[in-house]
Amino acid sequence: MLKKIATALLCTAAPAVLFAEPVELRSTDGFISVEGEIVGFNGVMLSVVTSVGLVSVPASEVVCFGAGCQTTLANNNFGLTQNDFEAVAGTGPAVLEDREDDFVVSFDNPLFETLYGTLAGAFAVASQSPSTIDLTSAGRINMQNETGNEVATLTTAVPGAASDLSIGTISLQGSSRAEFSGPMGWATANQLSHQMVGLKAFAVVIAPNIGVDSVSMQQLADIYAGDIANWSELGGPDQKILPLQLPVNSLVRNELIKLVMDPAGKSIAGNVLTLADEASIASSVNQFPGSISVVSIGNAADNVTVPVAGACGVAVRPDSFNIASGDYPLIRPVLASYDRTPNTSLLTELFDFASADMAQDLISREGFIDYTAVTQDAASKNARLSQILGGSFDDAEKSVAADMFQILFEAERMSPTMSGGAASGPEGARNRAMMHVLADALQDDSLAGREIRFVGFATSASGTQAAIDASAAAAADMQAAFLEYAGDVVSSNNLRLTSFGFGGVAPATCYEGQASNTTYSRVEVWVR
Image (cartoon, rainbow, N blue to C red; front, side):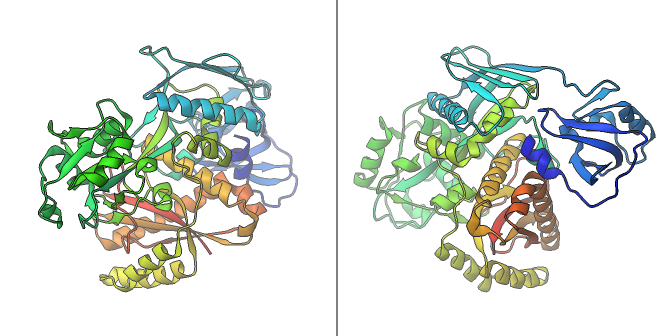
């Protein structure tokens, strides 16, 4: 909270003034207090005239204290209501009430309990916040923030018992209601429905000498359902396909069903060969003619892995950059999902820490993907530039394609990538994790004074110009959200933020979303 509120303070010089109806705007953790007269509200940010100048703070992140709160709500002409604040404390002194959380945590798989324990230990050791954390009791975590009058307890659920918060994988495909209208929501919210704490990814491995360049998610579903039975149907040799799988209730098999089979409306055929473990599969795929399987990235060994394409047909290799960026489709974010809204900011703080460099380093040792920021290799960048040069564009796309070539030619892409526009809770969770990763990466001294380009891409049922407009809007919104989220990083490292939109020119992946919409967009980050 300290970081979010502090970086959202946008100051301009202004003379000291006397306030007829002063208020105090105070963050719920107690670290930031702004006193002055509210003079404006744009739907997100409050403008407050203070003794040191004009500042802006996000209304939803502060409690309003003082008689001026009610006066402002009664008399303002900029649409501010009591619901826009975190809370309105009335006319009393600026003393926050005690807040407490007592949550029971469950896990969809024992591996996620290991992740949770690693995260909690890293958070306790890091001591990067004013909160204290006690890990002495088995299965119990106690957190306290005395300044903000907050206490939270997390207790591991007994198997089969009810819980308030669960940790497991959730797909970013399918359909879910929109919880955020744009990035300002998920970037700065103090209490969320979901938070990302880890990442799993899977590879498609095939027998040698098959000669198939890639496989789509739909084709993979058809293979395991028995609807595609020969490699010749995929442009390979006239050879029977032998799909292999892990036993029932294994993590990889469960993820294959949720990520590939369920979205396609298919079930795994009863005659698919089952092997005991991933090591056996990795060995067997190299030995059994015509075989194919899905395994965790770390267990692909020296097998032949093939790129995977989503619904739009763009095939993406399972390398570290494409996995971290979300371009590769066979990924599964591990999310903390809340069944009820916390009263404190402590749980949010704990799970946000999962995206910190230190936490990712430790979590990756437990078999999860390290999604901290990496830079795309030159060969992949050049391939995309060649795609632009060799592309076929309509009149609306021709000018943006030329601009895109120039803008990307002189810059390097970083892996943090976010979905634009309206977002579901799970999408917002991944976006927020990527923004945290980006903020950490941009603190590096080697990036001082650089230009950070937010580059939007989109598809639209309303045509290419609508897609271009939507991509530009998504990129501009993301730039503004990042400035609010990490303004201190931008200022301290002398960064310059810009935004661009290129519609559907030279896509790096398919642009899909859960929130019902005719336009889906993604925002990449490039550094010049």
